[in-house]
Image (cartoon, rainbow, N blue to C red):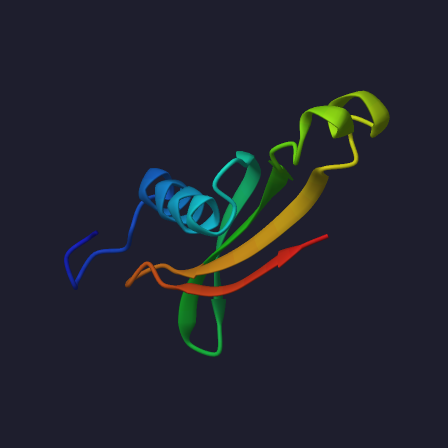
Length: 91
């Protein structure tokens, strides 16, 4: 984490986001494709987007399900000063 008077950098934010998502979805593979620093209502946030591939639920699903069936778009907002996840969405 950054000191109180410094913004987190993009690498730190991506690591925090990946750690947060992996805690919820342990077998997932995450790839971020975009990150942007924005200010909303005097709060600086990193807005991130990318893809998350969930781990297979079983061996049978590997043969019967479409390989993109477990691929989702992910969008996240993270506080740029404290590193807290403000919002995330899987679609």
